[in-house]
Amino acid sequence: MRRTNRLLVVPAVATLVAGLLAAGGPAEAGRHDPPSKHGSGHGPDLVVMTQNLYLGSSLDAALAAQTGPEFVAATAQIYGTAVASDFPRRAEAIADTIARKSPDLIGLQEVTRWTATPLKAGANPPSYDFLAILLGELAERGLSYRVAGVSDNADIGPVPLIAPQFGCVAVTSPTSFDCAVGLQDRDVILENTRTRHLDVGPAVSGRYAAQQTFPIPDSGGAVLDFGRGWVYVDATLRGSRFRFVNTHLEVGEFGAVQEAQGAEFLAGPARTSRPVIATGDFNSPADPRVSTTSTYADLTRDWFDDAWWVNRRAPGFTCCQGAQLANPTSSLRTRIDLVLTRGIRKVRWAKVVGDRPISAIPPRWASDHAGVVAGLQLRAGHRHGHR
Image 1: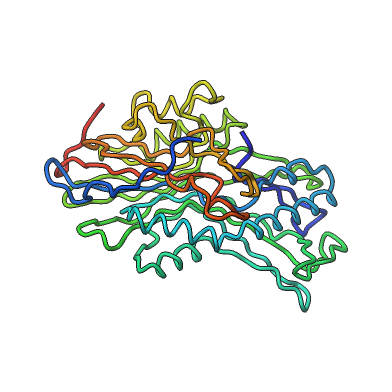
Image 2: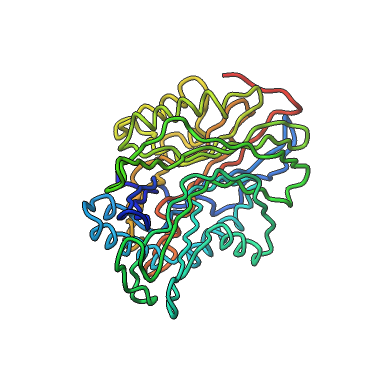
């Protein structure tokens, strides 16, 4: 699997610091409106969504760099690709999907903040706050979503940046350069404030003890990890209590760390007497024939049900498009973006979204991941179920 959500960085001290930030099926269903979100019977209906926004570039070039100059060149390539992948345009397509599906709660991953800083007159490298951009697009469509919770993950940089198109030309020493760039990674929960009778409590977030660490070149043995974590809110809808959790686990290339994070997830934020709805990029394919880790099986063996099971044998692929989002036909081949449930009454429906091209020219896709939207029915009152 191609590495996703991963960055190698260069600091402005000693020499240069490297770091690393983790990372067809059926066409988008949803040609017809889903069942009413306010159904009667055993309990209220809730619509939830998970979506990895994609930080905008593959970071493999930085991972392969062996020297400071190679790393500076890789950083320039990564930033240039992130700019070209044009998140403001991609955010329009993601906001359109949210407008069509009207989820009550959304779990987002790779909610990136690129902060580019000019250090000489005339330089103008652009910065991008994916969260602010997406919220702006939602507001333009007359939607009302608020940030209900954030997991602050990796916060890397600032590092030297070469981007001649923006006047960033020179890196004359580890402490002297025209421009710098930093990257912050976040997982975010959004709440639809127009969902009646939905009461969302304060967010709780944490980081996994297990983290993949990487040596920082020419730093005297310093290491970097990516601060992967989780965030949840406890909520009530029309008297039905539940917990909504969002996370992004380590990539399958580092399977032992991913599996340890999955175990922490089960023992920590997922362990509650409330019904639980978990969203995220779990980076462990649901298909055991292609998975290299046990994480998906561990999550669904005794605790969670997978909302996608309502679709029987439909593949529901969500990962991954090409790193530059330029591939003309979909390259989604695995299902790693999940809506998991425990203790709810039933899954009414689940649909893949964002798996159709948004343009004839790059970026052709809204993200390198498709999203998943699911309609769930909760149990009435405060009761919770067991498998």
